[in-house]
Image 1: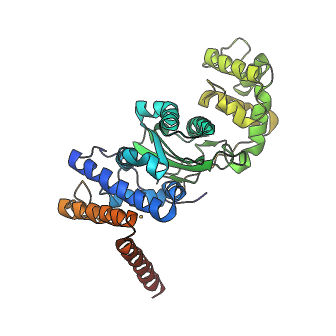
Image 2: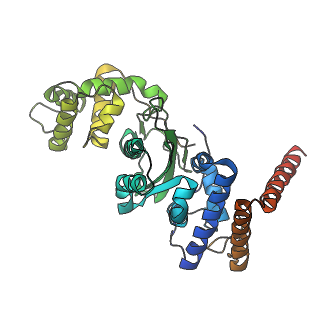
Length: 365
């Protein structure tokens, strides 16, 4: 798991319309250059890096210290690249709030509109499981409210999703990268990175940690047992008399019964059962730990440059002329590259190489 931190308090994420329109243009130009130079897979790699994503938000002019950077940057990329999705071979689905629930439909729509292989509909499962893991299997106090799913025509994908802690007002961003492959594990260290400044020692149920393997096995085994037996074990763990009702027992019993009917062979299958959420996973993990000694992890898995200023005026106000000039330079470079005139792209590469050399010399001094 890569590590990187970002300050993400929930300041106002509202973005002026004029700035958002420029974010769409500049963001699209940056992504197009990455695709032209390295291919669409590189875009997924970079979006799955929390530090690179934070830096991209700063380059686009958003506040480095605001959680709004996630929803705004993702929205700008999705809208800005929509006209060229098919040409670039990279597709965006989902977003904030109610839009996130449209992700499966948007995946299927993209496949139909661009004539993509039907196998890509398996990406709907990847989207569902990434959201399910960060809302149920990793219980860290943050409720997911944003889910962006990005994928390529060859079945590779990335996820950028964000949750909010209502009590503290802080946000946390989760990054994923994967592919349509049996080798990818959704339930054992699946994240590319998780970004937040607040660590919740002892307050986390981390069922996707490597050290939670036995707890995952025990939970899946319990889900295959008779529901009445599991509820009885929950009552014992809570030290309740036989006549005492288990808190939320009706809903818990319903989801446990659904899991029993599915007879999940492993924890991932259990997690994919409709209705199985945080309460069910917490109850099974509790019984697995107290009754069978399979302890889950309590480890919190949580683990950047201004070019155009920030919308809040720090470190300086966004300069619209400079912003528009950057967009023009990048778009002109792309046009020339498509015509075989790569002088400006080569100049940008030389600039990047010079910057890396200068920074290396500075660090070594």
